[in-house]
Image 1: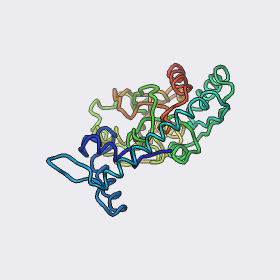
Image 2: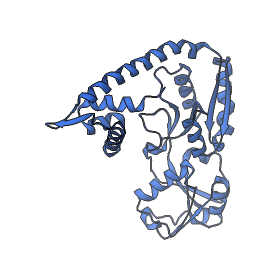
Image 3: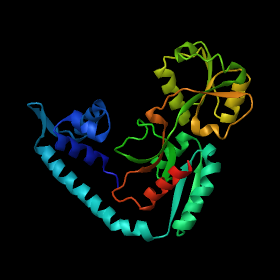
Image 4: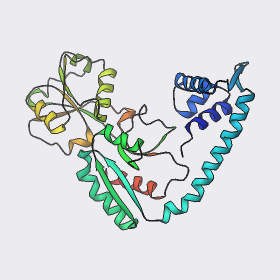
Length: 293
């Protein structure tokens, strides 16, 4: 029961402004404007008119807002009645996690549920970032772990529980450790070994390149971190790696150069779809994960 359309229109009505409503919904104003225009076109009638810099509902808008408010109240009632069942009934919890994290996190998460919520059966799906996101969107997953990328996890649709803020490193061959310039923009003539666009790491890598005005001479795409780092040790290029991954890849011949970059998108989180009454174990699981990350 996700009432995105109704929530958006009610927020516009409440704020009397597209820009303020978009800010509260954590989406861009053009996106919200397009959403409203598309809805009005589908309905064949305007829901709002502008009066002295304020958006006020038309007669049709008033009818829509009245019904939408009832729908939201019904949704809240539904989740309040469902909450005791979520907290007490046995269930299956499907968790998505990237393969690299699985070895260290899965045994500990299983132990957490065995000790605190033995009635909950936990199943894990390991895969690439986009595979897991698709699973959460299609309700094949209940929650997943990954980096917070606002454009892919809009706050209006997903609830995120911050686990840890990560730090980005450059990984180069050991014999190049003294040749990395402090001005990263001077790396523009280098070859970079990057993840494919289907993996969350590529979003972080692209952000780093953009922020530091780096235009690589050549980009090699590879989806396996072990292969990427092995290529770096062979002087085939420079790669980027999140600090939390380094403990898995202490390979000889590789030097990890700290960049000092702590972008918002390096916030490792636990994600679920938004719900009115979240099971109490979610907050406990998030707190537990913070201690083991």
